[in-house]
Length: 290
Image (tube, rainbow, N blue to C red; front, side, top):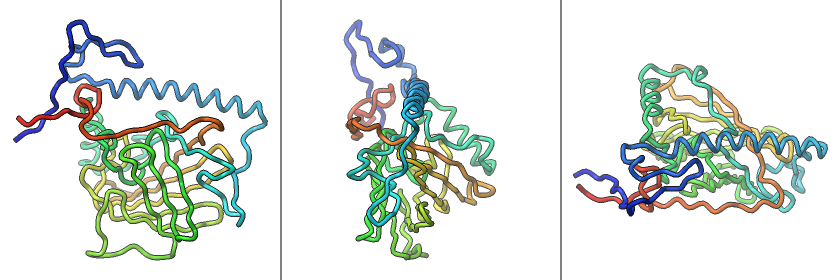
């Protein structure tokens, strides 16, 4: 039994209006997708937006220092003094350059196959939880430090609205059968000065990519993240990825996120299964059995 997307019926003369242009339904019938074109449009827009924002900050004397709590600890997330979330926008943050990733030959072939297909999407587009670096996608995320619970929570506003729990009580990772693989893995954390260091293992290896550049991973993936806030407006995120089943050695890359501008309202984000036709660039379903 095969499950496929059912193409919606459009009236004669209908158009599909997008941010780029107006499409006739028949233009999408051959498997074309709007997703990649929208990503490129968003990348171009956000590059201009970021440059304009930087110019405004520079004219106002530069960004303010990073906020601190009553105990003097750096605040990586929102607070009464710094409301909002860290924005993830195409063209900002960044993924590793292809030449910097030490693929095993079969891993490179898999990544190239995924990126060559216009009808393959990151799991997050299908409202699936995403592992490791892939957890961070538009529109953004927030970090909640809860010292009374000896935990840090990372809340993903996008995708299926997932959240990560980082154990800060000094525990070690479970081993053997006690390590139950999950989409988000098992995470422990510690503070090194003003830097939050998170160590994660125990990832599922199905329906999961390392990031939206289609890098594959196995259940042996090990990720170490370092979060620091150099000023009010920016969060630096350094990542170290190890997976001997897919890569010849560990590899690293860095991202920088911008804080939501003062006065800006959080955007609504819905990600629900079977709401539109993903195969034609419009989202999920409806589906039928053939």
